[in-house]
Image (cartoon, rainbow, N blue to C red; front, top):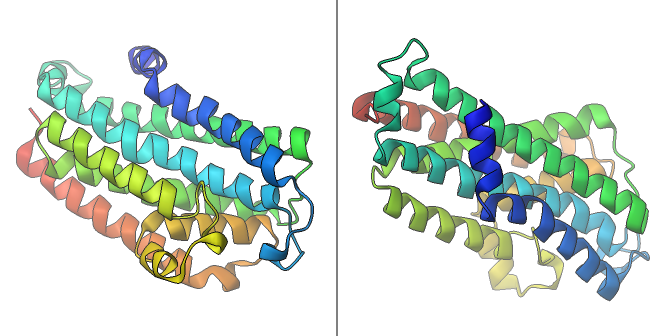
Length: 244
């Protein structure tokens, strides 16, 4: 586990997009829009009230879509899993460790973003934490299953890297994770509905703002479906290719 943590810290992109970029976005958008009740949100919430849960979605995507598949593919390309197969740990356990480390990084980044939002802009979180926390965990499972799927179907690390970057940057800029969907044209918002991260953002914003599970059924069903489909196909491809 220490090895995986060290590799994560040494990778400039992962800590930057997990911590520095969200914090920079908080300061940038906060200085522009502030957190006064906004007409975009029917004067019920401020811009930063909506931005913080969206940025939580972004840090989940950083670790699940960009970092996880790249590191899994790199280990596969460099035959690291093959060497671990010769040890009692085996490649399955090292993959679980990788997933755990990146999941932990996503959750720690989530805490940093929420605390920063509370301290700097006093964001208003009216939702029940017994609803918010499961929503965050479901979002992690769905997005991480997508990352595992990408690593499983693209054996080449370079191909997996290109696909991960395309999927990641497409989603964070069109899903509402960085730019509110409310200010985008109707055709962009329609296209955004096919992106998994859009439903993560909707789920997190809804639960942060006090909506119950019953009001987020669509997002929950979609994310559960993504987790089941991507996770099962990824596991099947993992067994077939053996990543050795």
